[in-house]
Image (cartoon, rainbow, N blue to C red):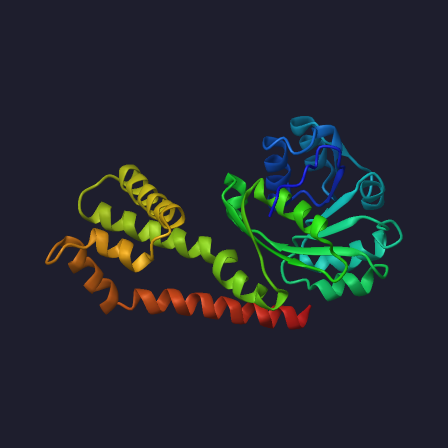
Length: 275
């Protein structure tokens, strides 16, 4: 999708937690807008004042103030807070694009709570937003235009990469890319533990493990080669990798990873029904 020029847009954040802060810093780092074009509200006034000092954004006294000063509203609060926020801002969002990064809150929830025709986009980023390597899945509400989709894509490309998907796949996204970093952290930790067992010091072993995962991921993204073919590139007949892969298969590593994604996706569906 063609990048959208956001230079003159004003962006309002409701909530400046870990993900909201990461997105603000990504937007500023990418120079999508000037710091003075970012407005934010948060119940934690001390955190908000610190962000204003560090990033040059404008701290707002309440959520409606942030909405009224902005063209694009990003709702970055905990899911259980969303209904309260929507009740507060429903009379202020006319002609504004509302983007939610609240996990598990459906487009329908927003569209039912806000005036008819409100443009709503739902996004599921992941924790790698904090290092500008997130993968963010975007789904579009019924009133969203191609231009609005371009705005959302440009914003979230500032913290990594994006895909546009239908909403019924968001639970699968949660199970894979939302929860996935935790699985990968466990893999890195396990690889490092193996290195320590074989005599490497902890710091060196962790570096070797983390950079190995980073390099392998970059090869998948950059080469366009099937992961099975990439695996075969490393696996010589009768060699060390072949023996290691045999042990992984015997221990069920592949099925464990698949089942982790499936279980997390199922839990996401359960939580969605409760919200």
